[in-house]
Image 1: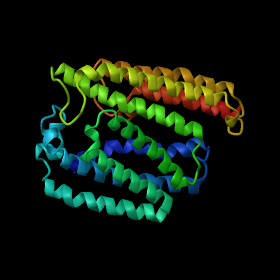
Image 2: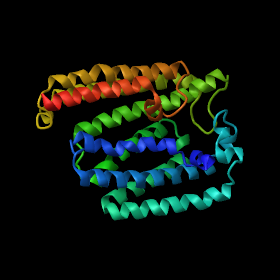
Image 3: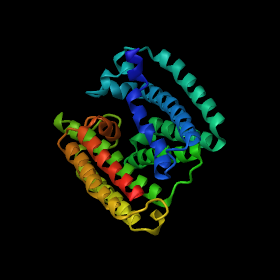
Image 4: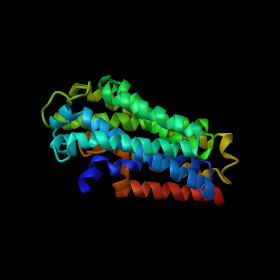
Length: 291
């Protein structure tokens, strides 16, 4: 069972918590019906994501076997026969589709688009330089859109703009950390990717620019008239900027040092300082709502 939990990447389900972002941004976290819809959408996305991970690992079997860390994955190491993955993946996908169809047709459309894009990424687009990180950023943002479709909460321009820049930066830092590992192993690039170690300087520049663009969008939102209806006071929201700026800068610093060995969002859930940033931000939001 533990091997199968690794194969379906249960820890990666944490990314799907992004489906709850529209609920939080729209201040609907006390609406039980909205929460129920968000939970059902979360479960559907988790099963779909696991099906994609199984397909991806089967397709990447050769390149994963040559990777210093990925060769320990269940299929690459031979711990699970490939034919079992071929059976389980469609079962997960069918259950996910049925749950999505029960929720709403719009959510089903978002889910299927997510599945098609991730399959395109696994079979072809992951080898396309820059296109791959843009697609990864888009897949993160699609989770936010899926949450909106599941709960019927229309996402604001500010939420989407903020999401695009944040997730582009996180997608770039993921590629950058892979190149730092290849640098330490004295290799030219990662197997199955289109990047070389010398590209790391460019990725660092692009990722940093995207990170600080997200900070700028957040600052502009705080100063916009759109937040008047949601928050009683504006000034506590300015307390969001220093922690978020610190977190994005720290993520890139750890990647540059070769200390970021997993997906940035998964890292954030297990990192104490990230929890501290989240708690500080939560206090600022509560203060802005109640004052």
